Image (cartoon, rainbow, N blue to C red; front, side):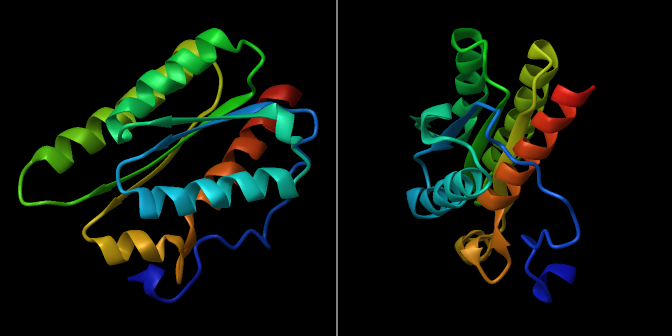
Length: 163
């Protein structure tokens, strides 16, 4: 597996835009809080590092990953000046099909909200086989998906602003 050999959050090969002109929201699931807290910290630190002012970041907790879609919809309805919404969550495979239904619903829901509002809604949801894989991708040996989601939000906000 390629991810065993590298940090997935390496952005040395790309240009990251300055975020000082943009406003973002971060919706973060409270379920699997150890993991989602790390994702949130990574996203927040990355936005700040790239020039986003703290007052231009709205953060909202939601109960679980399933609720990220509704949170993104509410945020975009109430805050028309948002340039992107970052959705952070973690769904870990269990013994039932619940994992499949939740992952599919969240991925499709986030996509549909972005299309509806013509604004970037970023899928920063880990879908892992076990807790260790989640930890490895939330600031562990494979980087931090929260960082990656924030970089994606910056790049997509810049794209939308320049087209």
